[in-house]
Length: 291
Image (cartoon, rainbow, N blue to C red; front, side, top):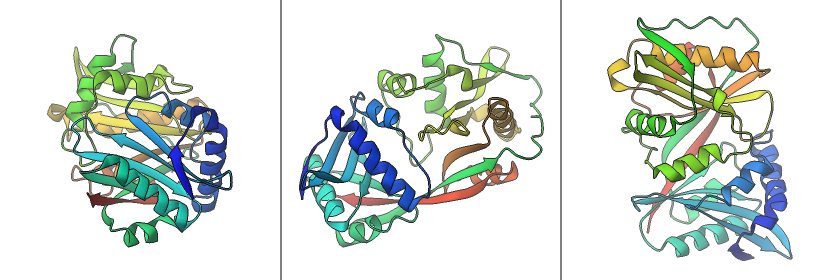
């Protein structure tokens, strides 16, 4: 089993590998070829592949946090040997510090290999979904709040608000503005008309940064980041932004909407999402290892 750095001209083969794994584990596609190609353009992402006899057997990408305190990994492997080889190569590359890797719910390979290699489960995330086939109530906005689409030139304003809104989130670590901008605005099919800002006069009270799902499914919308500023919490603004987003996606032809959430979120996010009709579609586990 050979592990090496991936090359952008291998994007199609990598996409086929990830798609085959997704259909086995998740029963559906999870990542488009265009999304994977986008990763090669991001300065803080590094990508490895495992191959045997000229065929790809595994994939791993790493995202190094700006503070250097941890590296976030995503791995796909068709067999234990590929998984072990990729994890060993990632550990060698990083050298020291904390590593996190996500195991997608139902993965038949990764959890057992992680346990054998000294990784421990530390956190769980949910992918939650809603079917847009029933009644979609109109949002009820808190007094004084208006909603509108994002406008070009407001990138830094939204970036700074997002850093404030998620400052206490276990998974969140702010990246430099240029990297945040490249991640969002360089994505294939990025549409700023899906970004909604809630304002109180001239103050940004909350936002919902939406997109189409990474899989490229034209009927699956995604709530990428839903945030409410501290001064406007517990007033129903998050629920209003969600309901507004659902109706917008339905009007654009979506039949489902997904989002990701920390299962241990202390701000009541899971309860909010259940209240508006969402359900847990998938459970992912984050594993940790300190080198």
